[in-house]
Length: 356
Ligand SMILES: [Fe+2]
Ligand SMILES: [Fe+2]
Image (cartoon, rainbow, N blue to C red; front, side, top):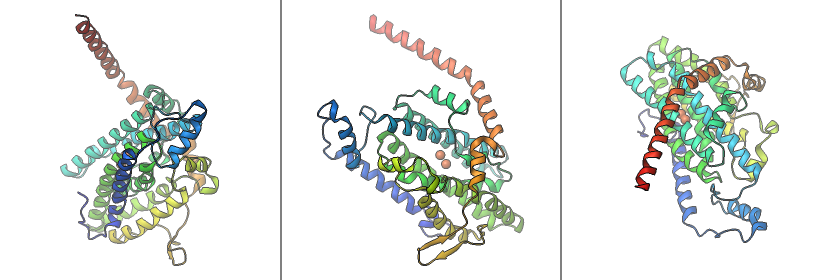
């Protein structure tokens, strides 16, 4: 699945990042096997114990004491991530019924279902921090928690499905690979599984664009148009520039975050340039060029004012996405009621069995 069928170097097709996920998984196992200091010596030692575990690159688990701000930061970040997975099903779901072939339809269906699964892993990880899934869903539906701004852009053509896979899932992987080493165990473990699936998503998008860009002139133009529209919103996915990022320093100290927004954005640009060359498409940035001194590409920053507008609710599709989510939640009420009734019935039956 991760083999090389585009004549693309390993790194260009996302293989290098997958290697990092595997390394993080191995590190997680090693950390679990290493002798960990048993428990805090006393209640006065809770903060010291927490700091020691983080410092030793071992994992904080749900039963451990943690600073309240650490818990809150994780809930906010994991919830925003979970909401993004669920809302992110909409732009691509828009194309399931119009996929150009049975094969494309089957692949896209599987991909969109994966995103639902990612949402579930992440809601479950957030629940270990003492908040319920119902509360999290309410916070999304009443607008008090956010999802990624990228999903407020429309998918106008089939090529957009390719651009989302390549760029949006690609940016997500660059962001998320370091989270596989996050200090909070349940989040790190969820991210390892998610990143492996995101790698497939990125490849399926890349393959769609590769097919289009090597097809008819109209197909190639459609692929270029999708790249033109998705490039800057994808760069904006890494968040505001470091100077304006409010949560970064503390998150780095807690080893929730490992790299700054600008470092990750640079890494993404450097990765995409070579991939775009193989596609035969042009990244819509006249100032994109290799900087020998920095050993990285210089590039034009995305429009951060636009990012702020979209985050605050004024993107092209914000209202549509939330209306759709609210409707889907209301339509699913009977399923939740039926599941609750069934669980209650089973619990009563078990109680009777135990009593008998
Ligand atoms: Fe995902
Ligand atoms: Fe994905």
